[in-house]
Length: 231
Image (cartoon, rainbow, N blue to C red; front, top):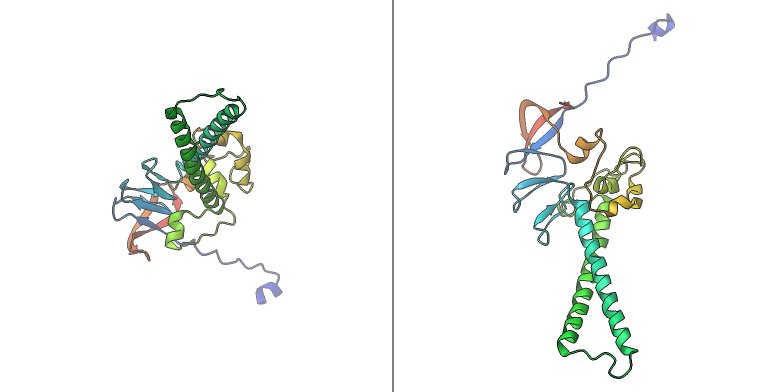
């Protein structure tokens, strides 16, 4: 250009301001609805990254308690395996004790048969649940997301650490996220911890800066325009 020919460096135009992000307000509980949150009609509140409402625990399974739900079905599966092992060991002992070596009354036999049936049923049920939940955790797509047909760009989202937590020292959300499953602490019923720098992003808890314009999203939810900054 003419300015370059004269050796004058022209000042570039400033970049355009970042677009305002829409923020949903729940029509039912009239509160801020974080991204990927769903209003549960049973709990009567919005749950961030809600997977489903579980009647076994009488609560919703979401970002705050997904780890404890996984541990619940995992511990139940281990309990079924332990009971089956104990019954099998008892039968094996009776079978090799000889005639009259294991004289049990019919009530004890009935209890043992019932324990075997319950162990098989709940063992298979929890095994299927663990496989389904692990697919949910590893893919980052909850049951609600699948029902709605929503898709998300999860290539940079460490899905496992969003459930089990993590810190910057052990990898956190910055090393791909799949290292969290190898931590022994994640198999213990302790609270999930996130770095302070990403806690608001993961949990969806923030105080948005609203302007005066309102709109409606594709699902009919009330939407307000929010500036990119967070206070």
